[in-house]
Length: 466
Ligand SMILES: Nc1ncnc2c1ncn2[C@@H]1O[C@H](COP(=O)(O)OP(=O)(O)OP(=O)(O)O)[C@@H](O)[C@H]1O
Ligand SMILES: [Mg+2]
Image 1 (cartoon, helix red, strand yellow):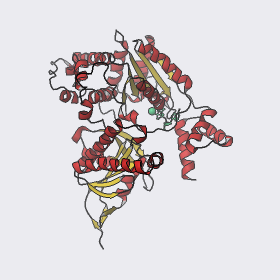
Image 2: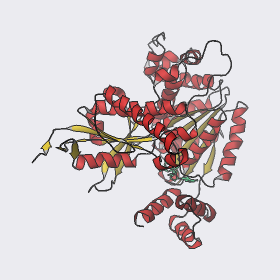
Image 3: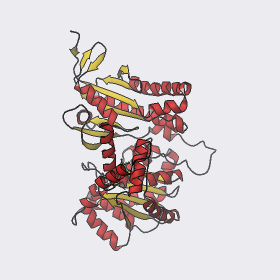
Image 4: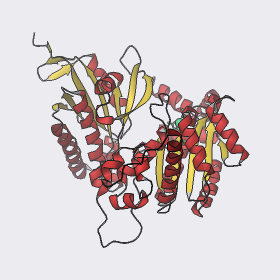
């Protein structure tokens, strides 16, 4: 018997999204070059973190690490390397890589590994979208607070081939600071390059987007006002899965293409951090803005904002320490600092700040939101929030905030309904790659009431059961 237990290891799988499509589009020779680049980007990250490549899976790698922290650092380095590659490439040459990590005690046989731990790591990778890193709860706990990674709770996922749902997390990563911090050549004057999209919005090829013309029209109307310098707050509401986040993302993508700065922050159940969505938004700004620009925009507020985003102190080493103040005044100063930061940053290009899942926002987030919305002075800023209508009872903190803001007529709510039959048909057609029969459209429409999340579930089920 050659099989042996080898103790605990962290398993990392990668997979290149849409690989067949890339191959078809580029043809053999060009695809070959791209494949080689893809593997060399990944392998550089593996060797920098002391990983051991177990095998090449054709479209990805299987790697083991003796440390979960190294494995996670490797996963992030892989995504950052791919991101850097993509920034220098044209559309057809961009890569989107999924990564999954799990830790366990697999069985080793010759040079390969077997067992449930391997299956789980692979399945997590399969469940990721291009640009995402998914890890099991075990990996998250082993890594702990080391490396200050942000983990997003995805809840229990049922993975193919595993008996019980598994607690999974997405690791939020940012493009590497060095590459993005590259200062503009000194002789170039004029507008700063637009900031890259936040990773959660930049995620590769997405499914076809259908309908929502009227809602997009409302958003464009507000955007026109924003562009003339008026701050706007728009809230997208509706039931779970109706398409709030997707609509916000589609709009933000279009605004980004026009040169807007797009920032994104999400609230989640764990609400691990006060001001979480604002922290995420600022963190992206700090990570991707050039040092000169950062210094100019945060001259007045940087010292205050290091409390929210400590990386700021590393990027701007000459920031003064914030003066000590009593806590109550400190909070007010923080609100003021954040509001000033947004006003400053929006002078470069108008800002879309997406605040996703506000029904999960904690009180600190809502207070800061209210402060920004009520602050005097105007700036080209669109605050685009989303929340699940049904989660908001009258006594919910968000309901109270909205009641306050309603008195000031400070926001517009855009309520999303199910897709109509035409759009359900378009969605099914896009999935199937051919026109859907009317009876199928009718049935799916009736079953799902046009909820795109349910439509996708139904289609996935149909595909899986043939
Ligand atoms: N108009 C659309 N066209 C195509 N796909 C859509 C559309 N709207 C939503 N989807 C897809 O449906 C799924 C659910 O959408 P989304 O996540 O935006 O819902 P949500 O309202 O934000 O849900 P939750 O309340 O859970 O956050 C996603 O996979 C999304 O890409
Ligand atoms: Mg959502």
